[in-house]
Length: 219
Figure (cartoon, one colour):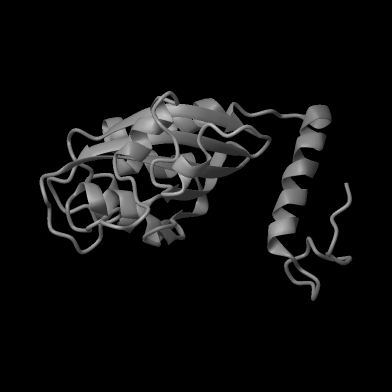
C-alpha cells in the first residue's frame, strides 16, 4: 500500500516525519492482513454490545471499565466531553455519563461496520432532557423536552479491549429540539434529521431554497 504525501518514518510517533492520521490507517490495514494469517480474530461486535449493555442497561461503571484497556480515552466530539486515562474516564462515567442519562434513553441501531480493530456504529439517540445531561448538553438546565439525534461512534480496540471512542452528532439539531436555539433562517433541521435517517422516503433538500429551480429538470 502506498501513502502519498508522507515520508519514511510516518508511522513512528517519535519520528520527524510522523503523521498520526496516516499512521493509524496503515496500522489498521497491516493488522487486518496479519490477523487473516496469524489470528486471533476477536468478536468486536460482541465486545461492543457488552460494553454498551453495561453503560445503558445495567448502568454499572465497575462493569464498564474492565471492557477497556488500562488507559482508555473517550471524546464526545461536539462538546469535547469524556476523559483520557483510567482515573479521569472513570470519574466522567460515574458522575457525568453512565449514571446521568435520562430514564427513557433509547438507542435505535441504523448500521454497523466492523473492521480488524474498530467498529463504526450508526444509531439514533433518543431521550427526554429531564435532568442535567453534562456530556451532551453541558451547562444547560433540564428543559423537559424530548429529542432524537443521529449519532456516529468510531470505536477502536486493542486486542479484546476498547481503546478509544470518538462520538459525533449534530449539536445544533439537539439545541433546536430542546428549545434553546432558534433555527429561523438557518439550515438546521432538528428532529427531522433523525426521522430522515430512519425513513429515506421522507423529502430531501427541504433546507435548500434553490431546490425548486432545478426540480424536474433533465440531467
